[in-house]
Length: 251
Image (cartoon, rainbow, N blue to C red; front, side, top):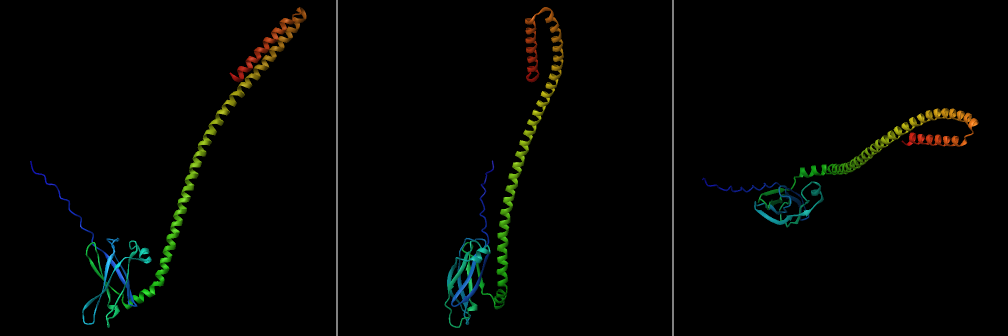
């Protein structure tokens, strides 16, 4: 029997870092900017500030952590927005502040990225576009709020329509029951009308017969003077008529 060898799971390769950032400005002895790793958005990246001196040497001017909150980063979907940095710089004499760069290291992968300050042309373009970008951002925020309101209104309308449909269905069911009851009552009434009509015909015939009996009895009474027989016969005829009427209506 061949030996079975257990498969050894292969560890998944860590995702490559995607470091994004910028040095916004160096002003009054302070440096401002932001940095984050898109692949590891919860990491807080360490930042080191360096510059090249006129004699070609690279000097470290300071260090900090990119962990400050900033609203524009939240609005730009940069993680939780806590990726800004700010630090004080001590520049050597004769060092041009424009030569300061930010060196960012990703703690999860060890990847390093360097961010220089924007050029004069980039700063001019930013100043030109900034007001328009602000207006566009405000328009997008307003559109987002309008969309939320419209979605809420649509949900409300859908709920009202469902309630109306449920009420209409219930009304149709009730109308169907009422129609069935009305049809049953109509059939019962029609049957009663037919019985009453038949009873009326019967009573007409009975009345004719009774008048014939009455005439005959009058003749016999005049001859035989028998009131007891007449009373008994009248009582029997009345009882028979009452029985017939009851059967015709309730039978």
